[in-house]
Image (cartoon, rainbow, N blue to C red):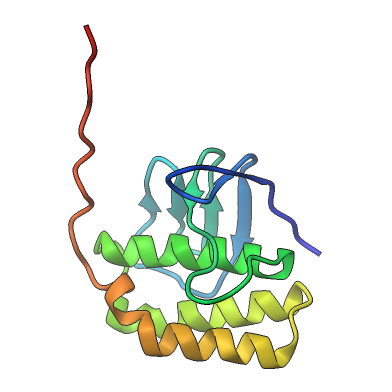
Length: 141
């Protein structure tokens, strides 16, 4: 079974402590490369050490069998928000990958179905393109 290494944070819940790579069947027209994540034309998704994410969303418990799926799902949704991936074309597949990974990692099929239904119903806004919030840099004396 694949594994990820992460730690809890304050602003985000978790941060990847090691690079993680997984082959997926989302294959963009060109390589997508960002500081903490990349997706090749061949579908190799790389999450670099230091990537932060909020883990599973909604009324749920952050169980180990949910973490890898939530990481990959958050990365894909972030690429959609950045307009690197077309959310209308890839959102459903990203949601299916979440469900599949959760089942692979030991989640019950019923809970994975529930998770999938939740992201299908409530996830549109989270995947829709929008500018990333500006980071305010604070300088002390």
